[in-house]
Image 1 (cartoon, rainbow, N blue to C red):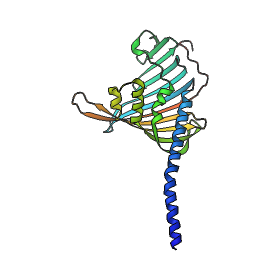
Image 2 (cartoon, helix red, strand yellow):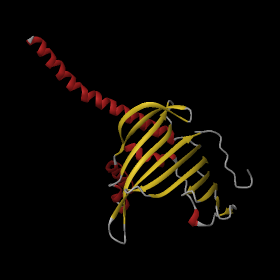
Image 3 (cartoon, one colour):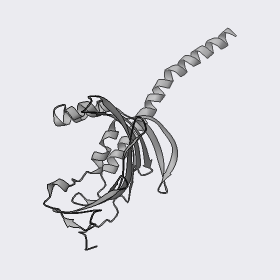
Image 4 (tube, one colour):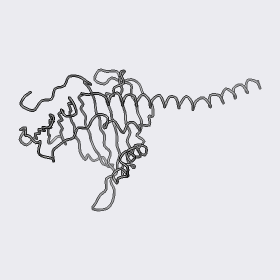
Amino acid sequence: MGIYVKRCVIIGLIVLLILPIVACDQEAGLRNAVARAITKTSEVQSYRSSGNTTTYTDEGILVSSSSYEEECEAQDRYRLRAVQDSIWWWEYIKVEDKSYCRYEESGQWEDCSEDDTVQIDYIDIEKQLLPFYWLVIDKMLAKENVNGIECSYYRGRVDMEASIKDRESEIGYMTEQLENMLRWEIDAELWIDGDDYIRQIATETRYPVPDFVTGDEDWYTMHSNIRFFDFDKTIIITPPGIE
């Protein structure tokens, strides 16, 4: 009986010693899978995406909601359409050095190439995915389908301190905006397909908003969902009226 107890104790100690190693290996494997997907998705030349965002106060009051659709042929040829609060919409087309825009008021396309107030810079996928390099993954959950494509499902929280420090080292100094972002909390979910492309991202971001009248702070929570598709497919963006 004594030998049996000793064996159980020894086995228990071995299990306790091995578990942290297995957990670290699993965590590293999950991080590598996400990093590999970010790298591969960032390399695409053309794509389509759609998404929506809603923002609430801590009291559950809706602050704003928006949705968008995007088509990108190249960094200088893309189309963006957005709807804000289900009330007004606008559309923007960039074709090389020309820009075109239209709004819900008239619905007519205008050449806005010379209007700096409406220019929308190209934001490549790599910049959109940058925060998720610092995703501390909680777990990989059961596989799910996104637009009919089977994907692995990851969940975690962005390490804001590491993310901000990386950004600080990139620009060479800490800005007030970056310092404020240290207080943000970003929970994220990623869906990655079998070819290592990120097909969907869902985030919940909690952040403080100062009240410049009272000097107090309110906390808002923003929910967003983005889907990517048609990676490196043929997409042709033309000026309006030529389609």
